[in-house]
Image (cartoon, rainbow, N blue to C red; front, side):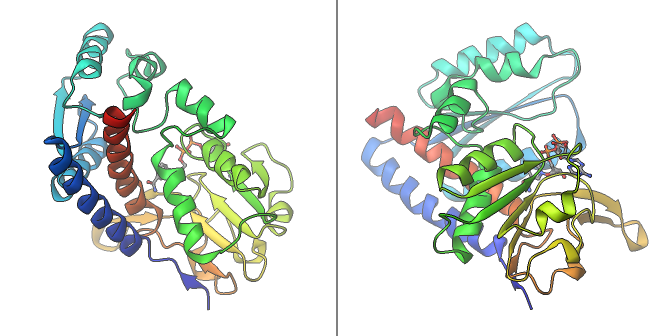
Length: 287
Ligand code: NAD
Protein backbone atom coordinates (compact mmCIF):
# COMPACT_ATOMS: atom_id res chain seq x y z
CA UNK A 1 0.00 0.00 0.00
CA UNK A 2 1.30 3.47 -0.81
CA UNK A 3 2.00 5.74 2.12
CA UNK A 4 -0.46 8.63 2.23
CA UNK A 5 1.39 11.91 2.69
CA UNK A 6 -0.64 13.72 5.32
CA UNK A 7 -0.51 17.24 3.90
CA UNK A 8 -3.10 18.51 6.35
CA UNK A 9 -1.03 17.52 9.38
CA UNK A 10 2.27 18.66 7.82
CA UNK A 11 0.66 22.02 7.03
CA UNK A 12 -0.70 22.27 10.58
CA UNK A 13 2.80 21.67 11.96
CA UNK A 14 4.23 24.36 9.67
CA UNK A 15 1.51 26.85 10.72
CA UNK A 16 2.32 26.13 14.35
CA UNK A 17 6.03 26.71 13.74
CA UNK A 18 5.24 30.00 11.95
CA UNK A 19 2.95 31.04 14.82
CA UNK A 20 5.75 30.46 17.37
CA UNK A 21 8.28 32.34 15.28
CA UNK A 22 5.80 35.15 14.56
CA UNK A 23 5.30 35.57 18.29
CA UNK A 24 9.07 35.91 18.80
CA UNK A 25 9.19 38.42 15.93
CA UNK A 26 6.40 40.48 17.55
CA UNK A 27 8.22 40.50 20.87
CA UNK A 28 11.54 41.47 19.35
CA UNK A 29 10.26 44.15 16.98
CA UNK A 30 7.04 45.29 18.61
CA UNK A 31 5.40 44.67 15.26
CA UNK A 32 3.38 41.76 13.86
CA UNK A 33 4.28 40.29 10.48
CA UNK A 34 1.60 41.73 8.17
CA UNK A 35 -0.15 40.47 5.04
CA UNK A 36 -2.44 42.49 2.76
CA UNK A 37 -4.83 40.41 0.67
CA UNK A 38 -6.49 42.11 -2.29
CA UNK A 39 -9.61 40.68 -3.89
CA UNK A 40 -11.19 42.28 -6.95
CA UNK A 41 -14.67 41.24 -8.09
CA UNK A 42 -16.88 38.52 -6.75
CA UNK A 43 -15.44 35.18 -7.84
CA UNK A 44 -16.94 32.76 -5.25
CA UNK A 45 -13.89 30.43 -5.22
CA UNK A 46 -11.55 33.41 -4.68
CA UNK A 47 -13.72 34.57 -1.78
CA UNK A 48 -13.35 31.17 -0.12
CA UNK A 49 -9.54 31.19 -0.62
CA UNK A 50 -9.21 34.73 0.73
CA UNK A 51 -11.36 33.92 3.78
CA UNK A 52 -9.21 30.86 4.54
CA UNK A 53 -6.02 32.90 4.22
CA UNK A 54 -7.28 35.58 6.61
CA UNK A 55 -8.43 32.96 9.16
CA UNK A 56 -5.05 31.19 9.09
CA UNK A 57 -3.21 34.54 9.44
CA UNK A 58 -5.25 35.34 12.54
CA UNK A 59 -4.50 31.93 14.05
CA UNK A 60 -0.76 32.37 13.42
CA UNK A 61 -0.61 35.90 14.89
CA UNK A 62 -0.01 37.47 11.48
CA UNK A 63 -1.73 40.83 11.06
CA UNK A 64 -3.93 40.69 7.96
CA UNK A 65 -5.68 43.41 5.99
CA UNK A 66 -8.31 42.50 3.46
CA UNK A 67 -9.05 44.85 0.55
CA UNK A 68 -12.25 43.92 -1.25
CA UNK A 69 -12.67 45.94 -4.43
CA UNK A 70 -15.68 45.87 -6.77
CA UNK A 71 -15.50 44.23 -10.21
CA UNK A 72 -15.60 47.69 -11.89
CA UNK A 73 -12.33 48.77 -10.21
CA UNK A 74 -10.00 50.39 -12.75
CA UNK A 75 -6.52 48.99 -13.27
CA UNK A 76 -5.08 52.39 -12.26
CA UNK A 77 -7.00 52.28 -8.96
CA UNK A 78 -5.67 48.82 -8.18
CA UNK A 79 -2.12 49.93 -9.05
CA UNK A 80 -2.61 52.92 -6.73
CA UNK A 81 -3.58 50.61 -3.86
CA UNK A 82 -0.53 48.43 -4.49
CA UNK A 83 1.76 51.46 -4.50
CA UNK A 84 0.30 52.45 -1.11
CA UNK A 85 0.75 48.94 0.30
CA UNK A 86 4.33 48.86 -1.02
CA UNK A 87 5.06 51.90 1.16
CA UNK A 88 3.16 50.71 4.26
CA UNK A 89 5.62 49.51 6.93
CA UNK A 90 2.93 47.36 8.62
CA UNK A 91 2.51 45.34 5.42
CA UNK A 92 5.30 42.83 4.72
CA UNK A 93 3.45 40.71 2.21
CA UNK A 94 0.99 41.60 -0.56
CA UNK A 95 -1.17 39.04 -2.24
CA UNK A 96 -3.49 39.84 -5.13
CA UNK A 97 -5.95 37.01 -5.51
CA UNK A 98 -6.16 35.74 -9.10
CA UNK A 99 -8.02 35.66 -11.42
CA UNK A 100 -8.59 39.38 -11.90
CA UNK A 101 -11.47 40.78 -13.99
CA UNK A 102 -10.74 40.75 -17.75
CA UNK A 103 -10.18 44.52 -18.01
CA UNK A 104 -7.18 44.33 -15.64
CA UNK A 105 -3.83 43.05 -16.87
CA UNK A 106 -2.62 40.59 -14.20
CA UNK A 107 1.06 40.83 -15.18
CA UNK A 108 0.99 44.64 -14.83
CA UNK A 109 -0.50 44.23 -11.36
CA UNK A 110 1.86 41.47 -10.20
CA UNK A 111 4.86 43.38 -11.55
CA UNK A 112 3.82 46.42 -9.47
CA UNK A 113 4.20 44.56 -6.16
CA UNK A 114 7.53 45.29 -4.47
CA UNK A 115 9.59 42.09 -5.00
CA UNK A 116 10.38 41.85 -1.27
CA UNK A 117 6.64 41.93 -0.44
CA UNK A 118 5.72 39.49 -3.20
CA UNK A 119 4.74 36.55 -0.95
CA UNK A 120 3.24 34.69 -3.92
CA UNK A 121 6.65 34.71 -5.61
CA UNK A 122 5.21 35.68 -9.01
CA UNK A 123 7.19 38.90 -9.58
CA UNK A 124 9.81 38.61 -12.38
CA UNK A 125 12.55 39.45 -9.84
CA UNK A 126 11.55 36.46 -7.70
CA UNK A 127 11.16 34.27 -10.79
CA UNK A 128 14.72 35.31 -11.72
CA UNK A 129 15.99 34.59 -8.21
CA UNK A 130 14.38 31.15 -8.33
CA UNK A 131 15.87 30.34 -11.71
CA UNK A 132 19.36 31.42 -10.63
CA UNK A 133 19.09 29.57 -7.32
CA UNK A 134 19.35 32.70 -5.18
CA UNK A 135 17.24 33.33 -2.12
CA UNK A 136 13.94 35.01 -2.94
CA UNK A 137 10.27 34.50 -2.22
CA UNK A 138 9.24 31.17 -3.72
CA UNK A 139 5.70 30.47 -4.97
CA UNK A 140 3.67 28.82 -2.21
CA UNK A 141 2.27 25.71 -3.92
CA UNK A 142 5.63 24.58 -5.39
CA UNK A 143 7.29 25.24 -2.03
CA UNK A 144 4.61 23.11 -0.36
CA UNK A 145 5.19 20.30 -2.91
CA UNK A 146 8.91 20.27 -2.05
CA UNK A 147 8.19 20.11 1.68
CA UNK A 148 5.88 17.14 1.13
CA UNK A 149 8.48 15.35 -1.01
CA UNK A 150 11.07 15.97 1.72
CA UNK A 151 8.92 14.07 4.22
CA UNK A 152 9.27 10.84 2.21
CA UNK A 153 12.60 11.09 0.33
CA UNK A 154 15.87 11.72 2.18
CA UNK A 155 18.09 12.51 -0.80
CA UNK A 156 16.63 14.03 -3.96
CA UNK A 157 19.96 14.29 -5.76
CA UNK A 158 20.00 12.10 -8.88
CA UNK A 159 16.30 11.21 -8.73
CA UNK A 160 14.31 11.47 -11.95
CA UNK A 161 11.38 13.86 -11.48
CA UNK A 162 8.62 14.28 -14.02
CA UNK A 163 6.48 17.40 -13.77
CA UNK A 164 3.18 17.40 -15.63
CA UNK A 165 2.08 20.97 -16.37
CA UNK A 166 4.20 24.01 -17.22
CA UNK A 167 2.24 26.89 -15.68
CA UNK A 168 4.06 29.84 -14.14
CA UNK A 169 2.43 29.24 -10.78
CA UNK A 170 3.05 25.51 -10.35
CA UNK A 171 4.75 23.50 -13.11
CA UNK A 172 7.71 25.75 -13.97
CA UNK A 173 8.63 26.78 -10.41
CA UNK A 174 8.35 23.24 -9.07
CA UNK A 175 10.60 22.06 -11.92
CA UNK A 176 13.18 24.72 -10.98
CA UNK A 177 13.06 23.74 -7.31
CA UNK A 178 13.60 20.07 -8.19
CA UNK A 179 16.45 21.04 -10.51
CA UNK A 180 18.04 23.09 -7.73
CA UNK A 181 18.06 19.91 -5.63
CA UNK A 182 19.86 18.12 -8.49
CA UNK A 183 17.00 15.96 -9.66
CA UNK A 184 16.94 15.12 -13.34
CA UNK A 185 13.79 16.94 -14.36
CA UNK A 186 11.47 16.33 -17.29
CA UNK A 187 8.76 18.94 -17.77
CA UNK A 188 5.74 17.77 -19.73
CA UNK A 189 2.52 19.46 -20.86
CA UNK A 190 -0.55 19.15 -23.00
CA UNK A 191 1.47 18.75 -26.23
CA UNK A 192 3.87 16.14 -24.84
CA UNK A 193 3.87 12.91 -26.82
CA UNK A 194 4.08 9.57 -25.05
CA UNK A 195 3.37 10.95 -21.57
CA UNK A 196 2.65 7.54 -19.96
CA UNK A 197 6.10 6.19 -20.92
CA UNK A 198 7.83 9.33 -19.65
CA UNK A 199 6.01 9.10 -16.32
CA UNK A 200 6.90 5.38 -16.05
CA UNK A 201 10.58 6.38 -15.67
CA UNK A 202 9.93 8.82 -12.81
CA UNK A 203 10.99 8.42 -9.19
CA UNK A 204 8.95 11.53 -8.41
CA UNK A 205 5.84 12.66 -10.27
CA UNK A 206 4.37 16.11 -9.69
CA UNK A 207 1.14 16.56 -11.59
CA UNK A 208 -0.47 19.99 -11.94
CA UNK A 209 -2.64 19.73 -15.02
CA UNK A 210 -6.20 20.23 -13.80
CA UNK A 211 -7.16 17.04 -15.67
CA UNK A 212 -9.01 14.59 -13.41
CA UNK A 213 -7.68 10.98 -13.43
CA UNK A 214 -5.05 11.88 -16.06
CA UNK A 215 -2.34 9.84 -14.33
CA UNK A 216 -3.22 6.16 -14.25
CA UNK A 217 -1.88 3.49 -11.95
CA UNK A 218 0.01 1.68 -14.73
CA UNK A 219 2.01 4.88 -15.46
CA UNK A 220 3.58 4.77 -12.01
CA UNK A 221 6.89 3.01 -11.34
CA UNK A 222 6.65 0.86 -8.19
CA UNK A 223 7.81 2.92 -5.21
CA UNK A 224 7.56 6.30 -6.95
CA UNK A 225 6.39 9.37 -5.02
CA UNK A 226 3.32 11.05 -6.51
CA UNK A 227 2.39 14.63 -5.67
CA UNK A 228 -1.06 15.49 -6.96
CA UNK A 229 -1.54 19.25 -7.18
CA UNK A 230 -4.68 19.12 -9.32
CA UNK A 231 -7.98 20.27 -7.89
CA UNK A 232 -11.14 20.00 -9.97
CA UNK A 233 -14.58 20.64 -8.52
CA UNK A 234 -17.18 18.05 -9.49
CA UNK A 235 -20.76 17.39 -8.47
CA UNK A 236 -20.78 14.56 -5.97
CA UNK A 237 -23.65 12.49 -4.59
CA UNK A 238 -26.57 14.61 -3.37
CA UNK A 239 -25.28 17.65 -5.29
CA UNK A 240 -22.36 18.05 -2.85
CA UNK A 241 -19.20 19.48 -4.38
CA UNK A 242 -16.42 16.95 -4.71
CA UNK A 243 -12.74 17.86 -5.16
CA UNK A 244 -10.78 15.53 -7.40
CA UNK A 245 -7.10 15.43 -8.24
CA UNK A 246 -5.21 14.63 -11.44
CA UNK A 247 -4.38 11.05 -10.42
CA UNK A 248 -6.63 8.02 -10.47
CA UNK A 249 -6.39 7.79 -6.67
CA UNK A 250 -7.74 4.23 -6.48
CA UNK A 251 -4.95 2.92 -8.76
CA UNK A 252 -1.95 4.18 -6.80
CA UNK A 253 -1.42 1.21 -4.42
CA UNK A 254 2.06 0.34 -5.70
CA UNK A 255 3.37 3.92 -5.48
CA UNK A 256 5.79 4.60 -2.63
CA UNK A 257 3.81 7.58 -1.36
CA UNK A 258 0.98 9.73 -2.66
CA UNK A 259 -0.75 12.95 -1.64
CA UNK A 260 -4.52 12.78 -1.20
CA UNK A 261 -6.95 15.28 -2.78
CA UNK A 262 -8.20 17.04 -0.78
CA UNK A 263 -5.84 17.24 2.19
CA UNK A 264 -2.51 16.97 0.37
CA UNK A 265 -0.93 19.91 -1.42
CA UNK A 266 -3.88 22.29 -0.84
CA UNK A 267 -3.31 22.94 2.89
CA UNK A 268 0.43 23.41 2.27
CA UNK A 269 -0.24 26.39 0.00
CA UNK A 270 -1.70 28.52 2.80
CA UNK A 271 0.90 27.33 5.33
CA UNK A 272 3.67 28.38 2.90
CA UNK A 273 1.98 31.75 2.42
CA UNK A 274 2.24 32.35 6.18
CA UNK A 275 5.83 31.18 6.12
CA UNK A 276 6.65 33.53 3.22
CA UNK A 277 4.99 36.45 5.05
CA UNK A 278 7.16 35.81 8.10
CA UNK A 279 10.23 35.55 5.86
CA UNK A 280 9.36 38.87 4.19
CA UNK A 281 8.84 40.50 7.61
CA UNK A 282 12.25 39.26 8.82
CA UNK A 283 13.94 40.49 5.68
CA UNK A 284 12.32 43.90 6.11
CA UNK A 285 14.03 44.34 9.47
CA UNK A 286 17.27 42.39 8.92
CA UNK A 287 17.76 43.17 5.23
P1 NAD B 1 -2.86 25.79 -15.80
O1 NAD B 1 -4.16 25.53 -16.51
O2 NAD B 1 -2.28 27.12 -15.81
O3 NAD B 1 -1.77 24.78 -16.39
C1 NAD B 1 -2.06 23.44 -16.61
C2 NAD B 1 -0.86 22.80 -17.26
O4 NAD B 1 -1.14 21.42 -17.41
C3 NAD B 1 -0.56 23.34 -18.65
O5 NAD B 1 0.83 23.55 -18.75
C4 NAD B 1 -1.02 22.25 -19.60
O6 NAD B 1 -0.18 22.16 -20.74
C5 NAD B 1 -0.91 21.00 -18.74
N1 NAD B 1 -1.92 20.01 -19.07
C6 NAD B 1 -3.27 20.18 -19.08
N2 NAD B 1 -3.88 19.03 -19.46
C7 NAD B 1 -2.89 18.13 -19.69
C8 NAD B 1 -2.88 16.80 -20.15
N3 NAD B 1 -4.02 16.16 -20.44
N4 NAD B 1 -1.69 16.18 -20.30
C9 NAD B 1 -0.53 16.83 -20.00
N5 NAD B 1 -0.48 18.11 -19.57
C10 NAD B 1 -1.64 18.75 -19.43
O7 NAD B 1 -3.11 25.25 -14.34
P2 NAD B 1 -2.34 25.55 -12.95
O8 NAD B 1 -2.72 26.88 -12.49
O9 NAD B 1 -0.91 25.17 -13.06
O10 NAD B 1 -3.09 24.49 -12.02
C11 NAD B 1 -3.03 23.11 -12.31
C12 NAD B 1 -3.94 22.36 -11.34
O11 NAD B 1 -3.44 22.58 -10.02
C13 NAD B 1 -5.39 22.87 -11.31
O12 NAD B 1 -6.25 21.77 -11.06
C14 NAD B 1 -5.41 23.83 -10.14
O13 NAD B 1 -6.69 23.93 -9.55
C15 NAD B 1 -4.46 23.13 -9.20
N6 NAD B 1 -3.81 24.04 -8.24
C16 NAD B 1 -3.82 23.64 -6.95
C17 NAD B 1 -3.20 24.42 -5.99
C18 NAD B 1 -3.21 23.98 -4.58
O14 NAD B 1 -3.04 24.77 -3.68
N7 NAD B 1 -3.35 22.68 -4.33
C19 NAD B 1 -2.57 25.61 -6.36
C20 NAD B 1 -2.53 25.97 -7.71
C21 NAD B 1 -3.15 25.16 -8.65
